[in-house]
Image (cartoon, rainbow, N blue to C red; front, side, top):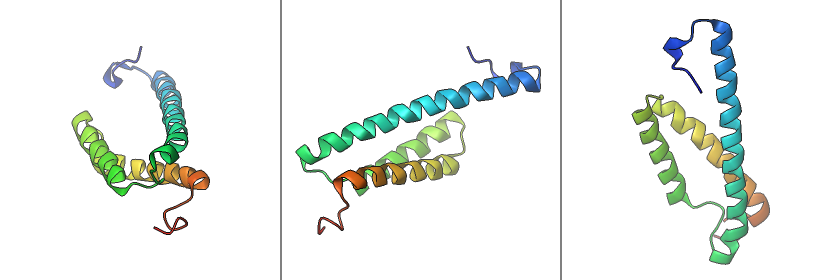
Length: 104
């Protein structure tokens, strides 16, 4: 179980906890990527392109709001997610092609 940061008495213990959080974040990001990979399988059957701009903006807006509520810097969260989302769309486009390649 993670301790609140204020309850951690030493840098060594704080670093251990940060390392654990990093492992957990990587595991969650891998799970997110697996969901994107499933989207790559589902989108063609539903006639959906890799990039759906309204979905991108919705995800970024939600993350920014959730970050604000959680006490995480909203602008930083939005920039981090924007990078991740763009990389995931590029992953999809390598398989599905881009709207430009499809003549859209």
